[in-house]
Length: 245
Image 1 (spheres, rainbow, N blue to C red):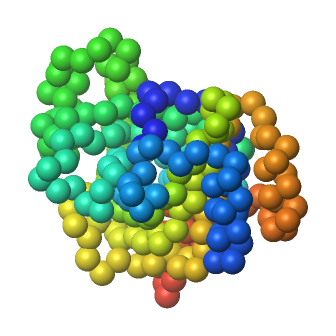
Image 2: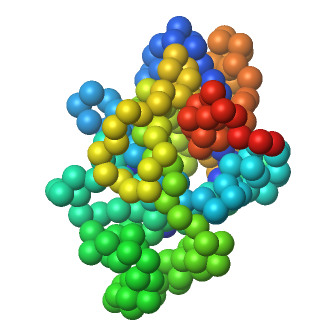
């Protein structure tokens, strides 16, 4: 799993059908290296708990087509928060069109309990590195000032690949996305599937895409999409009673 504290890069997304996904992964496996954090099966589970405003501001910013958007989420790399998990990640993702800046801070299980009980003073008083403290304070400022609360859990399988030339190019394939409206990382029940036959290919890079990737796009007739797992998850949960726009 990626572990940088901050990243400022481009992010392109493509929606693949099952046949395109098989061909794309076969091509990428010959051009890139599997991320060592993947299991023997070649993938890992990503579970995110999205923290939105009372009026779902993040959702409406996305559905309204705003160029500047923000998301704050909690992330683990298991299906749910089991007793054995001792590290949780707090993330803030700021997007401007197709570029993004991600702030990422790890916290302990004890700090997570303080976060969930909204004991922010004690959480911020824990000893930690100065840089990490500044990032956490910045993230928590947005969380508190915007009255955010944990609202939606989203989970999926991710196949991650890294560049062989040492560049920051990273390509992932996400599928089996499911979601539930809940305010914790506990084991979910009765989840809703989100685009069950689609694979989301995400391409993240700092400067440029290699020419061989353009061959893949042309071969599979792929075009860039603005797919948002968060927005699509909320739409799936409200399929029979759509939210007003």
